[in-house]
Image (cartoon, rainbow, N blue to C red; front, side, top):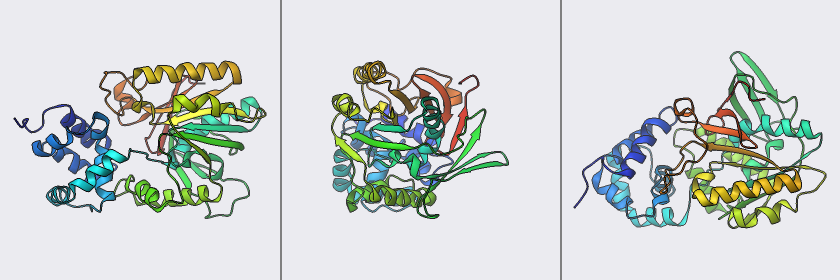
Length: 346
């Protein structure tokens, strides 16, 4: 029997995306998601996919990767009917590897604090690295805005226009750095690393950018150009299987930082516990630092577990929680557009 429209976990997922995540970012995605939440026939199709594959952004990106354009929901729904096999293949083969360089703006204060405290350059290791674009915080420019005050940082020895400039609205006692920290080693782990020189992978990265956000698409292209100039080392595989061996390759003269954004949601409770145990081991053995940038409930887990420790949901609604070595320090816009430093966070 077909379930009633608007009922079930998948419907709730799309309804949440359409009322919390998409508004203010994409009117198109907000509308499509809310209408999908009431579309019993489409929900029945989605429920045939594995749990994690029902994620709203994954379906919407797969449809746009196949050629769907913005417009009224009936037009989008007709496109899905006509291209369902192609969309389904993409959903099952790919994942939401959003490689938003803008998140470097919300990571930079933490990275700079580590570099200053250690008085040495950084070695960066990103888990869930996608194409590795977040491994270049030293190659991007920044504009931090607090009300009417603006602080601009640019990468040293880089020609104007050769790098993206990441704008971030700040609030609270954000420890803004005086300069971009030096990075001497960078590497990443991903189940399926994306290649910035592969047109299909680049097309997928562009499909993951929300429709109305042309500035993010242009920023992505500039970040890809930076990565193409000096491609980072990306290791394919499970992050828990490769983390220790890759961390051991970081140069000892640099401060090692393991970081991630919107990744822990894809691990079950056991996988996250194993990751935290490994981080503790690396901290003890190598003096490793850990920066986490995760949503409170990015993806509802089948086992009911949370992505990050519980915090006031109203304050985090639609945002990520930035943590340094397991301690919450800030609430951040999911695409790096804002950073609110928590009082007493050091």
